Length: 122
Image (cartoon, rainbow, N blue to C red; front, side, top):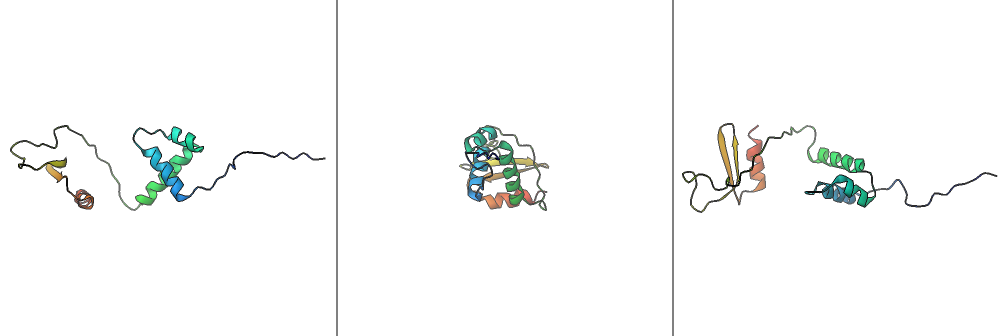
């Protein structure tokens, strides 16, 4: 007579919805989050979350687009500017120095405008 072994417990190959994957990736990308901790809480292997993150990055930034990073230095007084450059009552949300030029964005600058201006600097 043959022996049959029944393995109980959760199904090892699970189907994750796009919303579940997105939630886990965003949780793993939160400030101070540790991928291993997020994976352990969801009962998945950390490499699966890393794979989902790579897939999301490819979907958001297709390989045809050129992605580059530049170093950013944050200064506590960068929003104030020097008194000769500052306009009364105007505060800057960001000040970027590149190629000898200074670009300042105010608090009310629309994200698509900032993206277009910075994209034109390539």
